[in-house]
Amino acid sequence: MELTPLQRNSTVAEVARTLREGIIGGRIEVGAQLRIAAIAEMLETSQGSVREAIRELVQEGLVVHRLHRGSFVRVPSEQDELDVYVAREAIETWAAGKVVESREDFDFATIEAAISRMRSEGSEDVQPTSAVIDADMEFHHGLVRLAGSERLIAVHETLVAETKILVRARSPWPGRSYKPIHQEILDAVVRKDPDAPALVSHHLRMASQLIGMRSGEYDHDRDQTNRLAGHDEEGAVHQSKAADSGTAGPGIQESPSVSNTSALSSER
Image (cartoon, rainbow, N blue to C red; front, top):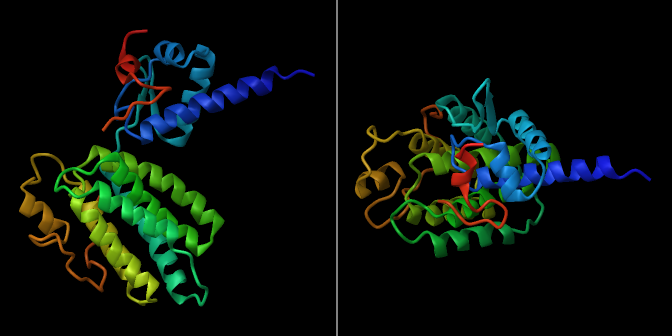
């Protein structure tokens, strides 16, 4: 029996998974060049497998290939930000509405656990940690999963991956504001509040505005940050039961597989 093609495909898939997780997790920086020889050496695999894996990531939109220059981790544009948050708002507000309108008893344990992690990891008024960002996305994806549409769950998984990249590349919410914002949304969903979808919409639009701000255009003073994030001096959430009337605006951890991202940009 000939198993070589299967083994090759498996290797390519594993390389693609490792690179994908490195990009989404922030271990491979936005804009970094993916040097085939360096990656093959780090992962102890063939350059051919790395080359094919990179092609997959190009098709997924995580990587761009530039003629005569090589492959680079895609730098999110303002249009990317707008697209991701418009799509997330459509899916997540629908999901919140479906859960609220349903007579089914839902298990909110996964979502509650995500909020607990935000509380333990996001107590400081600084840029959120990777753990907080992951918990944030688990909260939102957990809400979509409760609604039960396998098609939209799959679409939302891609949006979650893109959001992680955007959050790490842009000015985010202050770390301490993650828990109260999401707790307010969860409380509304649990009590079957018909305004829960509007809270989700408002939250996503505010997040889009914050992420879309560039250095030099945004005052990183703590009070200003809290005001934009919908918080007062004590970090309490300002109640909002109506969607924002405007339109949606546009950390590196060690890994056993990709632990030295500088090598990705080194000469072949």
